[in-house]
Length: 164
Image (cartoon, rainbow, N blue to C red; front, top):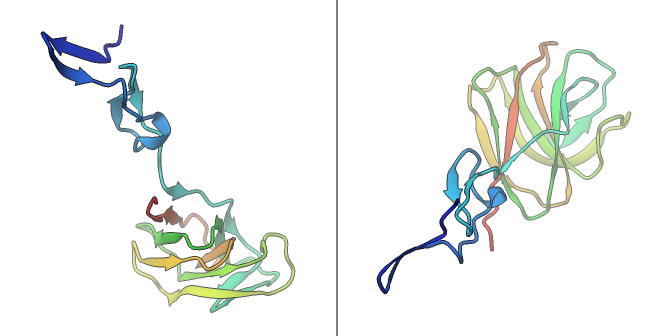
């Protein structure tokens, strides 16, 4: 039976009854007690998963998502929100590109170029390369990681917007 309040005489030693921690506000993997005294494990993370991974037909070039019916490029796509601050990074293994731009239209399935705002434009990036940016629109982040037909490189996006 969980305990949420411990008193010793007239002194309260522990009182969890007004705590507001919940699984979704506690960092993923950490444990704490909720206001009932139950042990909870956190599920919160600010990492955003790509809605498309290793997409092939197209690539980022400066400020533009370029459609190309090719097989050599690998790109990831995320949704981003205006005025949010993000950290975009690569992992330990990298491809030949670290190029990203924010665009207003979903590039998946598009056969047209889509202009946007450049975030980073690097050839032959280093492991763990990263960039901070603030999205100016609700839209899509296109990240090209490779242009030599190799798959399996990852990009990582974190929402670093401070809570108000």
